[in-house]
Length: 603
Image (tube, rainbow, N blue to C red; front, side):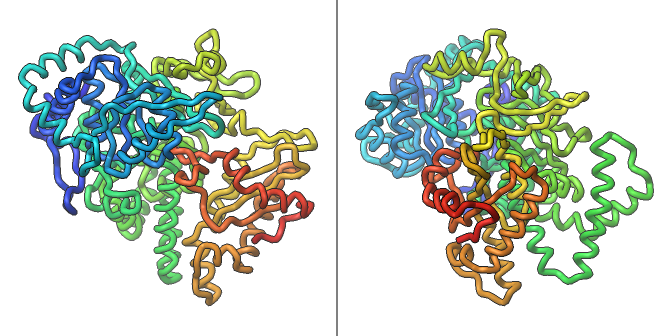
């Protein structure tokens, strides 16, 4: 796929990335040379087909070039998220058998060295990884090779190595192992998902048929390449012949979008939530007249979007009003995102339907999809012009879905991975004898095949009263409130449901200023009486939409948000419920001891 695309792309742009403070373009020919040189360098280092090659780095072009080079010579790649602690790195390296490791910088090289030195205890045994070769993208590290050195070795032998590279590439078939992607999971050790070349290609072929990405357009890349969603999007760019724009950092996304002017922006819900909040904060600083114009434009855009999403004709009068709304309001929003966005795509976690409606109304169609690492990672998506907000869309071409008797979503398709590496029992539990993959999600399919996710099967709470509660539904209701960033519902074997709540610091700071207070630290904001009162009102509002047995009877406001680095979120920003429940057991115990008969006073 890559070599064919590079030959077709030639001197055209493959990607843009910031180098020394300036965005620079790399052509397909230059990217091809990099991949061939790295591949030849790996051959010179003695790598044979079937070897495992790990990549520990943030998202950057070198990540993909190393990945493609390893695949081209018949190796399998093992992505490791850059925030993974030493113990997790040790487990992934030892379990996968990867002995060659690409790392981003000296800090990551030191992490690998510590993993090799310390090993890890797992399932009653000690695992000791081996890293024969460590290759550093940036800078130097003791005992490691630099990427420049590997590419130089490759250049020195490219004459003879090129034939060997293409011989190995030509020997690959769709059933061959491409990568083992470890799912962070919410409990227990990470499980390695075995993905083949065919799994990836079938996913790309399905996406291509929907024209979500178009040749020559710019797609925006910042998601972790260690996660299947981000990596699939990078492969999609190669498959479709797009120009990939790499963001500098996650805290410069808006600036990077204005500079690179993408057409396709895939992201996780938290990014769209932040963009939405930023636009509303900007609006809040304007006068009443401007806000009234904005509300009118949003109403007009919402009517237009509702008709467009149903495939219905848009009346001439509404087209005229929408053109005025575009000129007065929406064009400014588009420019803040670069001015050329054609589609937004959200995946990896649920997104508030109100936020989706907002983006559709302003003329930025947002397609919510659904998939898992085990499905490489596609199952469903809403289509342009055929979106049903509140659902995750219809199955991709080639994918078959059904709902089991207990409500679990089951899937079949050529994109389904082969199972879990070295875990036959867990593979047999997830892939049944008829070939259906059990997603672990609860959902509903309507008559037109649109899928709605209602909860995680294994996250259902059974209260002491014997009632089952879907925590994610309640958490999503809480997250939709102005001052809430995240919420975790606790209630298994308890009389009532409780919640741990983290704050949207920007909104809480604005609340403090509205009351004439100077915003302080996160802990100080969490302790303000006006914040406690505001959260209590919002909990009561949510309770009004719940059955009595689901309602929140006690909550605590935490002084900081949950994070990947603290191990409270997975790489795809899913909650690690067991970790959070253990870490905040004192807060949970205090709510239980208080009786939790009504929303508790927060602290």
